[in-house]
View 1 (tube, rainbow, N blue to C red):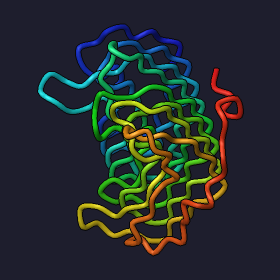
View 2 (view 1 turned 180 degrees about the vertical axis):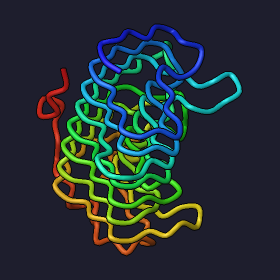
View 3 (view 1 turned 45 degrees about the vertical axis):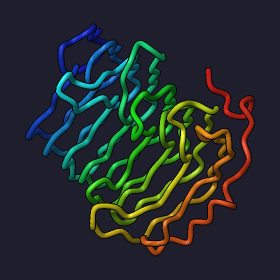
Length: 233
């Protein structure tokens, strides 16, 4: 699926189910409930797309730029995505959501804008489990409640990302490791990341490790970051 313009669809722009070997590239998406939703599929590549202003359904749900749900196999990628949610024009949950998905690379994406959801994030990994997820060299700016989260899963690597937020009504945590929902969590690597995050109370938050994933992640080791260093267009 290449070089298409999706404008104000009533649901997802691109919905992939029970499929294999799908490439989605160089598309522009505006005003939908999700840019790409992939379910129970294998070898899904989402490359060099732009998405503006996602929203939740009237009944709730979605609000993602990309969501992988039970995606497996090899060669799953979300690379060089450009996403922006404008205040009062969108209603986002997660820019990128990895739900029960394996073998996924999320690299070189630029993610901007979040809220008013009090649970939305820039990148959510390991949600309800997942194996072998690499999140590296992404830029995140004001992405809502959370920058990057590890909610469960194993062999998840969060490397060399830049995460920045001013104080917003929903800003909370830049980067956390916290096993949730009773799902197994192990072998989590978090290193080389730089953060500058002001929470909704106006306090600087360096990140959080709940201590239930066996990870050595220490939020104090996150590097410092200025807005200029973020280099967000």
